[in-house]
Amino acid sequence: MPDASLSSRGDAVARSGLILAGVLLLAMNLRAGITSVGPVLGEIRADLGIGGAAASFLISLPLIGFAVISPIAPLVARRIGLEWSLGGSVLVLAGAIVLRSMPVPGAIWVGTAVLGMSIAMLNVLIPALVKREYPARVGAMTGIYSAAQSTMAALAAGLAVPIAGLTPAGWRLSLGVWAALGLIGFAVFLPQIRRRHDRAADAAAVAAADAPAAPAQVGSMWGSPLAWFVTVFLGLQSTVYYTVITWWPTIEHDAGVSVATAGVHQFVFQAFGIAGSLSGAWLLHRSASQSGLNAVLAVVAMLGIVGQMLLPALGLLWVMLLGIAGGAAITSALSLFGLRTRNHHQAAALSGMAQSIGYLLASLGPVLVGVPARCDRLVDHRPDGGGDRHRRHVLLRHPRRPPPLRRRPAPLSPLTPPGWPSPPHDAGSRPRRSGRPASWCRPACGSRRHPSAAAA
Image (cartoon, rainbow, N blue to C red):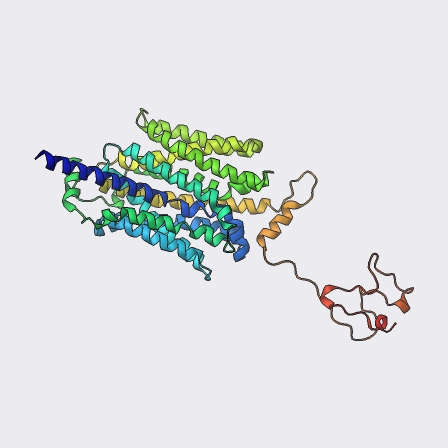
């Protein structure tokens, strides 16, 4: 009998360890495919010939996928099971990353859309899995997997440019390499997928929570003021986060910061996001009111935004504040899915509603910030009035199309066409263009001389 007890306890510990490893690897896939785009966005625009508006839409496309798929995720999990939904989503995510990197017309758009939909499933269902497996440690587990998510997001952003410079594949390799992370996550989570979906265990968990046996629907959350508070808070936090990872390097560069320094600031932002995720989980269990903590985090984030606008020379300080506030805020928002619900069905329903509306709001952030950013490039703010901003704007809008040369027709008679250098025998009748020899002609005309000059 003791041996059987020890064996069952060992099996439970092993299963718990595998679930924790699977949750962490699934969380690592949530942001790597998104944060790796920003640092190489200039190369993508140059290679595909897209403008600033199209680039903003490309960044916002995953967020639109979040908004569309989030309400459906709880229904899919009810139908095929939580484990199958998570495992299938991470496998589809790996395929979408590969598709996005292929040199096929339209592949980057289709791959990015599918990537957003698969991440939406993971976003909604991971908090439900944490609620089911760790009902008494929701805040701590959410902080741990949020820190893992931020760590991989920082590595993906920091390694994007070095990886792009390794081979002629450039940005395609930099984006496609993260498909391997999805395959690793699927392999580690596979033992949970192979386990039969235990509906009896789900029913026991619901009964222990003293909650209704029927799984909650997203529609049942629309009348809850608390659900709307969680939704708006998540939406505002995500708006700030995705705007920072998309346009913050451009904003800093326009303020006089070098491209390399702006990249370092992005890494600092992600690194302080890790610290914020861990500190947020610690503060959640020691705060008398989660609303008070969230209000403080909102003030810190606003201080970072206003500080960058007024004192851009202290850019490093502002990204530190934004990073730690953003990391703690996302941990708090995701923890509310479990802390404010009774079972994992309700957690999935609240997560689906909050992420659907919240990410729809967040998708507008990069687009709205990108419009004034493009218009601001038309104005020269340099003290010397050199016009570098205008030239950079032209190169970004037309990276592969230089201004066409104005061709002149070939001469049909020995008479000198307008604008050509005067021939030697008529040198005194027409002023010659200064600094150019008589045999000079435009590149569009080849190397031909004027007929009369050749005869002389």
